[in-house]
Amino acid sequence: MTIHHAEKGDRTELTPEELSHKRAEALAGGSRKYHERLAESQKMSVRQRLDLLLDPGYVEDGLFANAMAEDLAADGVATVTGTVNGRTVVVMANDPTIKAGSWGARTVEKILRIQEKALELNCPIFYLVDSAGARITDQVDMFPGRRGAGRIFYNQIKLSGRVPQICLLFGPSAAGGAYIPAFTDVVIMVEGNASMYLGSPRMAEMVIGEKVSLEEMGGARMHCAVSGNGDLLASDEDQAIQWGKRYFSYFPSHYTESPPAVTPRPAGAADWDRMIPANQNVPFDMHQVIFGLVDEDSWFPIKPLFAPEILVGFARLNGEAIAIVANQSKVKGGVLFVDSADKAARFISLADAFNIPLLFLADVPGFMIGTKVERQGIIRHGAKMIAAVSEATVPKISVIVRKAYGAGLYAMAGPAFGADATLALPSAQIAVMGPEAAVNAVYFNKIHELEGAARQQFIQAKQEEYRQDIDIMRLASELIVDEMVQPQHLRHELIQRFHLYRNKTRDFSARRHPVTPV
Amino acid sequence: MSSVVASLAGTVFKVLVGPGDMVSVGQEVVRLESMKMEIPIESETSGRVIEVLVHEGDFVNESDPLLIVE
Image (tube, one colour):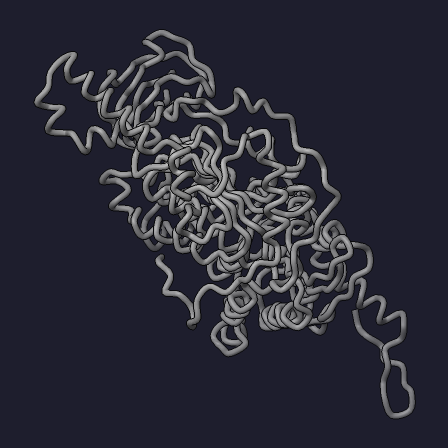
């Protein structure tokens, strides 16, 4: 539309009607055609997304960005400051109806400014991502410079660990844009619509000759189950937004605060007498232990589809937020692999950054061995997890549920790794390795000299000797475990201990930063 | 047709189904032994077992097919 300026002496002024028309235009986003396309793919508009995420009444900056151009409402991104359940947050939300949510110069400047707002307000930032990436036609203005797109990632890294950074991925996050999710703390992806990739399938075919679908290349399920770039796979946008809010409920607004508590609830029902198989080799579902310990309905798993041999997630213990790392013997025996070590390392560092106490539930046969994992670098990946455990200075308690063998004990915050307490259930067994493997290793030659019944007898006798050597009561008498707890009393014991440890000193080591194994 | 594969390297401890058996999603079909743990291997599809490719005591690597389901 043409703006008619009202003459007022020597200056011109928009009429209220003109301003509200311009505002309505900017709020409407792209043309009807693009809004229809959104609806066809079960997507919401950027305004609907903001309304669902935020409490009513937020303020917005840069709504009139690129207002002089045609069809570039807000330059394709909303940047707002508001509250989620009464707590201040800032939000960057791409508008997929404006040039597919792509970034021009003002888009980038708006994103940079809202990140700087997060730094100044010391408040969390939500990234609602649905973007095709850079506008190649505008590249000189938005790509290479000091305040070009690269600065978005630089700012994210600066914000990392200061304030929570939460990514809700509703659509594509392509090429350079794919790094926005990568630098946030958590990525919630909508199945069927969300995707992340550096090169599109079209580009992959052109450049490397690979023929592949978008879903295979960078679909939500692939990232949540295989690559580990995604944390949670939501079935629709509403669920993604609700999960984002729920995730945030376990977090403080910044790194110097404690996470907010809620009204305590009792734990779920647990059949402790039958839950944990006495035979260390037989798998069971560790979820039962978690549900028996934490406040009912408070378990919020992170990366449940990725490396499920280790469970990580947030929960509440008597209303207080805790972070749990637990071995899941039901999947791959609970053995630690390259991916499980990465998953745990990252989660431990997240919890420690935001003062969420850590609970380890150990039932681990150790790190996987064999050529396959050695070639994948199991040693350096395992080192990451052990480093993260060591550096975590938040209150941390290790519960030996069943076995804790070899470096598995170390990775699960064993006694040497600064745990505030190592608690053992009566079913606990701590050793370099299990009795079968140990006897075979120590007496390999002797065993092979013997035959038949004599061999069996010898093995059994040595295994029994070994079991006595690592008997959990003996380890308690040697001060290796700090307390023996019946499973029925574990919840109460943990509530008490976490409460008592809440003001612990958090110094670890004086230096610039560690040289982290990667 | 699809194959049920080993989730990690180990020894075949028990084969729980034979050719002709019907299996359903999530049903344990083979039990491996690895890292001194028994590892249940579940079928990811429903259908009839056409062929069992391993015997008890065999060593299998991660991703090796254990049986074929139609």
